[in-house]
Image (cartoon, rainbow, N blue to C red; front, side, top):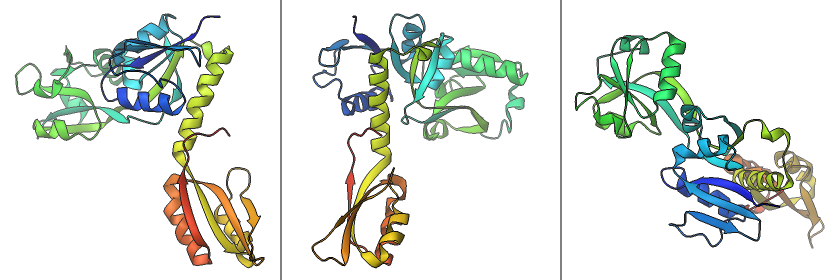
Amino acid sequence: MSPLRVAVPNKGQLAEPARAMLHEAGYLKNAGQRDLVVHDPDNDVEFFFLRPRDVAIYVGEGTLDLGITGRDMLLDSGATATERVALGFAPSTFRLAAPKGTATSPKDLAGLRIATSYAGLLRAWLDEQGIEARVVELDGAVENAVALGVADAVADVVATGTTLRQAGLEIIGEPILQSEALLVCCGDSNNDDSPAVETFLRRLHGVMVARSYVLVDYDIANEHLDRACAITPGIESPTVAPLHDQAWSAVRAMVPAADVHKVMDELYSLGARGILVTDIHACRL
């Protein structure tokens, strides 16, 4: 049986977070930063490090089984690859921007030149909105296009918008697209997962859950135990164990990481003591 073949971005904002997630999932333990292909014999997976924009094309053609790329690059590519799982990192938005004071809405860009590195994505959106504009396709650094005279506005993927503002541009309208890192597959192959794909998906899901939760341990007087367990219900139920002092119990539960400080405050106010928080590095639920 041939190994599972997975595409991984080799550069850009997706590269390091993708490597980190795969490492946390038990893959790429001996991979070097310059490796182009890594065979993971322990897990029977081959990883191919590709340009992020090419990942969807290789997966869509069925050359590789799965790949990590951005939603923006998936849609811009026109490939037949499909979104399988949103991975929860590298959030960004695809937005229009123009020199300050020159436009207040996308409709104001009708008849103008718009520079972008995502020509397919932009043309599809312009057609959908009924806006006729000339798309100037560039390979990068589109924020300089207006200053250099090749465009009147730009459409680019931004995380904070700082680079656009430094170029004297301001964002126009709502985001064209909300993007983030995705795991993509070929067509509708998710309807017929192999055991290798199921294992890969389960491991990535375990990493995402582990990143979203923490373990909270605390001691609580038994008279407040039910109220404490209501604050920390855990996944199925909290773990409760008796202490040497029979009037107290020790409680352990998984808590959403985003809520942990509020939970600690509530537990402390209730009388809990010895409240400890521990990161979760991997899990299966």
